[in-house]
Image (cartoon, rainbow, N blue to C red; front, side, top):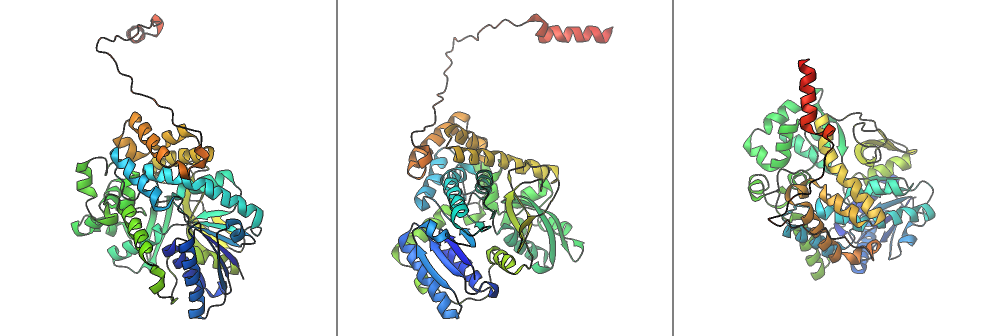
Length: 476
């Protein structure tokens, strides 16, 4: 029987889904669920619901809750992390402050100013969890990490600790559903190879019973009624040649072309909700939070356990417990798995789990255009992880400055001003930045009569001199 620590169990939708998946797995019967959160009402509600799931479905096991993270992790076999440091209050600042500076975000949890500040709040906590695991969990205990920003978080964990960890997302599974519907073939009959980074994972091969599906998918995306559903993802597909694993709402934030001005937003991000709507994810989270404040949504939720969801978590645990291999897409530090992305950055690659642990696969080189687009995100992710680990204000500014959307909208001075405002507004969730501030770099006004300093130049280095010498040598 396994002990499973669920850190961030106040995440009622996600925690409920993962617990239901685990309870629906016979190999994990009798598991002990240690639920931990800092949010007492939600935690107790989740504890009660978990106990009712066990009872109503006749599943053996135990569910208990605690505010003490170390107690939850003690002797755990698996630690599932789904935290959101700062909750909806911090999330509102992630969205609204950048909007004042023209940075319009749809999701704001993985990149952009919102994603980077979420990483600043989350990474120190994740590192503390990993170190708790090193001290208290069973030897070899695995962290299954769901918190965003996925790539920066996993990069930082790999850099700062030796704890076995993998980042999990459902982008590939949900994208396969879309491809299945668009191409009219059963999802389970599609074979594929993916590689890239989280939320920018590329379908490198895509086949149905040996037939290349790409020609059909390309043809489908030229039809307006299909293109309309995924304008941004479809447009990147049309220009870069490969389909990727993230929706229009997410992807529009990771590239510089679709949210930088009103014309671009109206053309590509005009669909409601996660089809590109401004602040879509924040508004959804706020709605859920407000509803929970009025009543407990789990009170009338069905406890019936049926089939498992598309989330990888329970399947990975099952593979480790039974030794039966399971293949999934895992977010791990790059160890030459993708050879044209930097070692140490977080990549999302096919990974096998079994009773000996995790085994990521080597992809080799991505197509150069795909690697180039990934690198625009990787650069910012590396800087964001460094800023969080060192609580470095200047590295923070540089991470946001390198963000593709922000750099398409803001000057460097505006980036610094925006980061300063966000840092001051979020200090309660950033204890590592206590006593630290972003140094101002005020705009240097140049008087109308200002003349540049006359700096003498070595005549041998003058362009005219060198050009004249080159002409003389050519003529000779």
